[in-house]
Length: 229
Image (tube, rainbow, N blue to C red; front, side, top):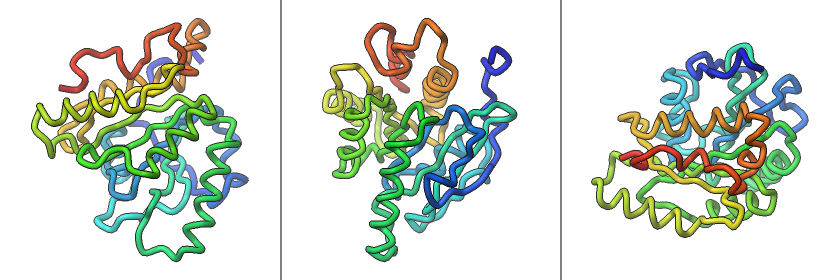
């Protein structure tokens, strides 16, 4: 896959929406899922990452994403996956429960899944479902990269304080969690996010351990200096 070493995120295009695990595309060999509460800014982050404001639908109404949406990265069998926003509003309880079951099935059984980007509003991090997602990832030894979104809403001092607090609270023995601040509005933190995604989607033979979140290699989410400030 040497020709894919330089992933062009701007080449991302919509492939399909899946209502259940069985409908996920078989041609995708490696994918990273984006998950977060309905108001965490998931669609905006994906649009910023790919430099395409129309790639993922954004709305002032939380919970518009209720399908597993696939965006392939050019010709490579690699994809970014936009998961349903958990806790989404104005959805019947029965439908919400059904979606949570499908989401759990995807997270547990999707073999192409190589990492989870967990988005949290920097002003309201580590809510109940965030904790549940982190516990699932720890149990599955799945690497997680936390994006503390909407960093432009806080001043530098409080933002850094929250970053350090979340890092401390989410530290895993296997080193499988990295954390950064991010702003879709200003693009702050974008290079760091892209570096993490490249390391997950295109792991090198001698860095397989770091792909799983071990401490044999530096965590890609912590290699850049400045922590997004």
